[in-house]
Amino acid sequence: MEKTLTYSFASASEREGTNAEKYVLRKELFGTDDVLPAWVADMDIDTPQCVLNAVKKRLQHPVIGYEEVPSSAFMAQIEWMQKEHGVTFCLDDMLYSHSVVASMHTAIEAFTEEGEGVIVQTPVYPPFFHSVLKLKRKLVKNPLHVDEHGVYTFDIEDLKAKIDKNTKLLLLCSPHNPVGRVWRREELDEILEICLKHNIVIFADEIHSDLVYKPNKHIPFASLNEKAKNITITAIGVGKTFNMAGFAISSVAIQNKELKEKFTRAYERVHFAQGSSLSHIAFETAYKEGKEWLKALKVHLYNNYLMLKVAAEKYPQFISVTPIEATYLAWIDCRGMQLKDKELRHFFINEAKLGLNPGISFGREGSGFMRLNFAVSSAKMTEVVKRLENALQRKEIG
Image (cartoon, rainbow, N blue to C red; front, side):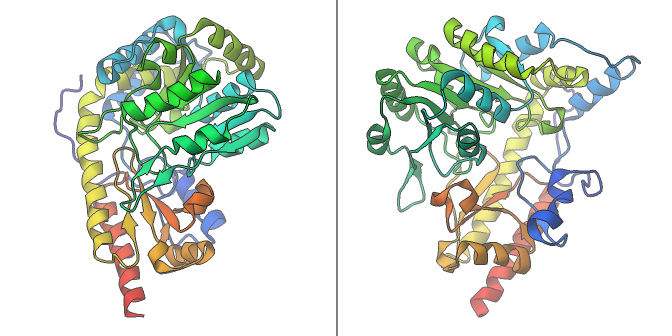
C-alpha cells in the first residue's frame, strides 16, 4: 500500500507541450488552440505516484524487451475485482488487450458475421456504433429512455421489438458513458432474460466500474448468475481508474470455455501480443497499491461535479447537468439554449472557450447535449466553471 494516506488534487502537472491528445488536437478539432480542453476521457490529474515509482524501478534494469504479462498482474486484477465488485474470475479467463475498443472489435468479429445484428444503446461512446458499421454488421439501435428528471433507463419494450433471429450480440456500457448511469440489478436482469431467450452474447464494457459514487454499486454483468457468466465477455482495466491510458493495457475476462475459444480465434488473427513490459508493472502496481489514492480521487471528482452542477443551476433556462452515478463525464442538457448542434458547439468553443464533446457524436439522441470531462484539478475546474458561467451570463444579458 502507499504509505501517504492524504492526497491533494488542488493542482496537477501541466500537460500542454507533452503531446497529450486533448491538447495537440485542439486546432484540428476546434479550429483554435484558444480552448481549455475537457473532452477525451483521460484525467488532467497526476497518475498515482506508486505506479510511477514502480516504473522507475523497472527502468533500473537496462533491457526493455519482449515480456509476457505475468500471472501476478492478472492475479492482482482478479483479487481487485473480487474485493471491489464481488465477481470471481480465474487466471485462465484472462486475456491481455491494449484497449477496450480493440476488445470490442474482436468480440464483434468472433460472435457475428457480416450483416448480423449488434445492439447498441444510444446515446453511447461513439466506437460502439462505429465498430459495428466498420465491420459491416447491422446496427440495431435500442435508444435509452430518459425521464423528465434526466434519468436514463433501458427501453426494454423497444429492445424486444428490435431483436430478430439474426441479432447475435449486445454491446453493454456499464457504467454508462456518457449518461453516467450505474445499472441496478433488476435492470441488468431484464437484459439478461432477453439475451438468454434469443441466444445473444453480451460484451460488457465495464472500464468505468471503479469510478462509481456512493451509494451506487457497480454490478458486473457476469456476476448476476451462472447463466450470465456463460454469455458474457467482460472488458476491464486500469486506464480510466488510475489515469493510465498511455500505458495501453486492459484485459478481457471470458469464463465460458466455448466463448473464449471463439474469441481467441479472432484475437489471434489480430496478434495482440503481450503489450509493454512497463505496462505490466504499472498495471499490477495500480491494483495492489492504488486503492487509497482512488478513494480520495472519487471524493475530489464528485466535488468537481457538484461545482459544475451548482453553476448550471444558476442558469436553468439554458442548461442542466444529468444526475451522475459514475464516471467523470458530465452529460449536459443544453436544449434550453435553443441552438442547433453546430451552433451549440460554436457557443462552447467561441463564447465559453471550452473544448467539449458534442452530444450528437454519441448518436442522434445526444442532439442538444454536450459532454464535459471534469477529471481535472480543483484549480482547473474552477477555471472551467468560470468560463462556462461567464458565457451563460453574457447569453442571458443578450
